[in-house]
Amino acid sequence: MKFIGKSPVRISMCNSGDTDYHIKDMGWSNLINATLASSGYVSIVEEKKQNHIDYFYINRFSGTVNHLKIYDLEEDNNYLKLITETIKEMRPSFKGVIKIVTNVPERSGLGGSSSLVVSLIKAFSKANSNRNIFPEEIARLAYKIERETVGIKGGYQDQWAASYGGGVNYLEFKKDNIFLEPLWLSEKLMSKLESNLVLFFIEARKMHSGDIHEILEKKVKKEKKESLDIMLERRNNVIKTREALLSGDVKRFARLLNHEQRSKEKLYSDLLTSKAKRIYEGALSYGAIAGKISGAGSGGCAFFIYPEKNKKKFLKNMVNVGCRHIPLKLQRLNTMGEI
Image (cartoon, rainbow, N blue to C red; front, side):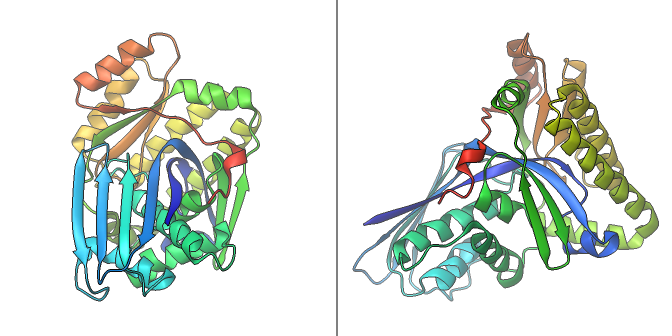
């Protein structure tokens, strides 16, 4: 019997920092992200009478198809580490077929690795079928696997976004406490955001996310006063963005999004690639009223707010400068916590 787990990726609209080193310096931090109905991961597990695991990875964005046989969960293979550690947590005796299917670009800055782990946890939780597993438990287990067991440095938002889903969410991070508030936005506003938000893949990140966070942590410690001032400014910007969205003020949201990107450039100036900077400025010159480069930097995706009129021309201009358009649809609140 096949068991299927699904999880979304997210775009981060504004973020004052969701890692332990941010939280330690600031006391608490916050962010707003939006989970995508149009992009994510699907894990399919099927137990069989055999002495190994057939692992398939299918990426419909890049066209990549991989098939590997796993005989020992302890074998030293960095490529499979997230998969094998998730199996060990969920069903260590498993033998059979695991298929991971996604349409998310690799190293995109959209939280793909966390979405993969969450989808696999969901699939195995159905296969185990001995109890319900709740989004908070899934998120904490995914964080443990990715950050603690495998040792990939990073924050909390990706695991919580993939586990809860539900569209636009406000999150606060304190030591040993994560608060998630789904923003109750009208269908009219959600549809308007979908119509005006345009997502592009710029280039695969030059570094893995864990390496990026190592650099950022050192930078924050070295330039503590300057970095803290920017992070506190960004925290206040998140609160203003929440207010703008709840009031349905898209123009104010756009202004705050631009402010978020400019403050991010100050904080992550060494990590933003020349191509990402060029494309961001180019998008504004083509008529985008706001935008943000996704992830911590070093490439990935970017999204922009563009008026519905003349969108085809905007898309053509962006493709001509080396971007690849990713269709975007936001999840809705009624999908929150879906397994």
